[in-house]
Image 1 (cartoon, rainbow, N blue to C red):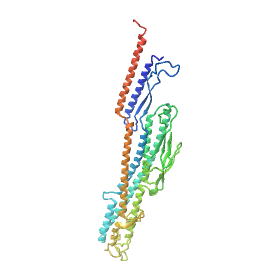
Image 2 (image 1 turned 30 degrees about the vertical axis):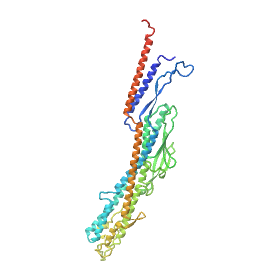
Image 3 (image 1 turned 180 degrees about the horizontal axis):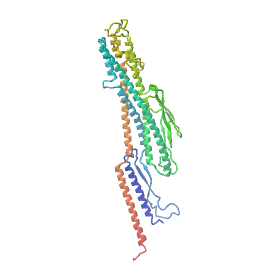
Image 4 (image 1 turned 90 degrees about the horizontal axis):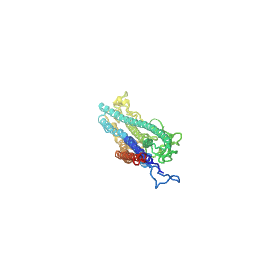
Length: 505
């Protein structure tokens, strides 16, 4: 026989469950602007009906419901969309970093303010043409020296700026490595907390959100794979469990986080000075397989870390900046050596102690490239030493200066290729422009894709005020109805307890 007070328990359960719904709504609304927060919902479940199953369970015309309970509170999340989002942000991380690197290199190589290399060289050639017309004019000779100094300074400045930007990339790689290691540790710490909570039958939704936010951040640096292991104990079936994180490669993936264990990443710097580069990435730790990834084993076009290394350098003279520095150095050396070869065949303006004009020496100091090219101090101190004449004792002869001016269109061997200085520089700038435009285009495309997936994820997981207000009203009305049910049962019991057995009174 059912209990006379059975309805009170049913009403109480209804009130408690709807109250849980109201609390969850309040939690959602309070975290509407919390980064990474996923809205939560109460999974309600009917309680065991009366009577139970068995011979001694009593009789009833049918099962009578005993109310409702809040079975679990889970966050609303789509694993597939999460995976897709991380793939898109991984692409975006690579192309955004590459686009930034290309923009910086464009700023150095394509100066349009009148102080660029092409403009400075043009003025230098013009000064030599004027010298060919007036080889005896000391003022014109000084202008040639100034233009030569300016040209060397532009080469020096371009080299310094590229080197400084490359040094900045090195610092960014080191900071990114530290950030990645911090993320590994934080994910492992969250795994540890989750493993302690789930076996008690709870869902640590806010910890899940924090962990997913870290996974999102990690995916911008490296291409990752994630898998989950059940916690055991009394963990609910929908409990996620600790996550295992692996770095995707062209071969076997490298395990970097497993439960509370994690690896530490180290980027191996090889070489020294301008020829150093990053090539291997070592992941070492206790409790994870870890391993070493060679640069060539990383999935190309994926992640900010790879993009930074591709820009900084991944082998001798390989990478965006090493290649540009090499091209600039080759161009500066070919220019200086070619100019010196013609200049040293000329003759100075002023006669020496023998009564003859001596043969001119070098105009530029011996150089290894753009970083150290400079006009010789002897030329700067005495412009008369410029070899404008192609014959001794012919002070008014400017034929050698004309040959020097003709270097503008002369064929030089630069990086093993026969080309002119202008053609080599133009091809360099042209390729740079194409690469920069490609990086910008892919950055835009990947950003659009990431935004589209983010909007899809937000439509699933983000908090909607309108929806939560509807839920608030729904839970409030259900709470009131359960409370009213208790009042009704109370009135019924009052009649049974206080009114029965008092017939005629």
